Amino acid sequence: MPKEVFITGGTRGIGKSIVRRYEQAGYQVVAPTRKEVDLASVSSIQMYLAEHGPLNIDVLINNAGENPVYPLDALSVEVWQRIQTINLTAPLLLIKQLTPHMVQQRWGRIVNISSCYSLVSRQGRGAYSASKAGLNALTRTAALEYATTNILVNAVCPGFVETDLTRQNNTPSQIEALRSQIPLGRLATSDEIADFVFFLGSEYNTYITGQTMIMDGGFIIQ
Image (cartoon, rainbow, N blue to C red; front, side, top):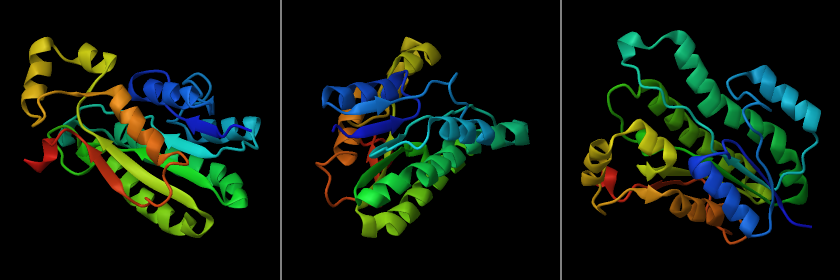
């Protein structure tokens, strides 16, 4: 039986590349759309899991996230709570609900897609940076708690990635400005991120757990 992967945010960008990478390797992939489950709603997540459960998931990839830009004096509590729910509470709920099968079979992999902005920040990223820093901490705790059942839990922190959304949200000159800040001189591809996520969330990873791994071309070491 092929292993089953559950991934959020699998319809575009990094998530789409991760889905493709697992499918190419013969895994069965469950990637609910936004219409199927609203990750900004705890009740929607719980309803989805109740309706589709029990899910015998072997690998969980918490990829979905939102990154609105608001300076702190313009950041509403509603926006703050939405970002924390999508970026941090939803991964917690999925970990809680999808690990029993992993525990029973004494094998599982969880990869949380964090961000380089969990370690550094910039203006307007207060809610996003806080949520991703929390996701890193959740990763470490989950790694400790599930270690005895051979469930390995890690976080990946991409930097600037060349995706349709990046091109949509930035002019060519803005993308060039981003590129100039990266020691390697280019943005990452979503396939590069997906390959590393696949390694961490597969049988190839046998000993790495509790780590927050940065894929940013050297951006934050400057």
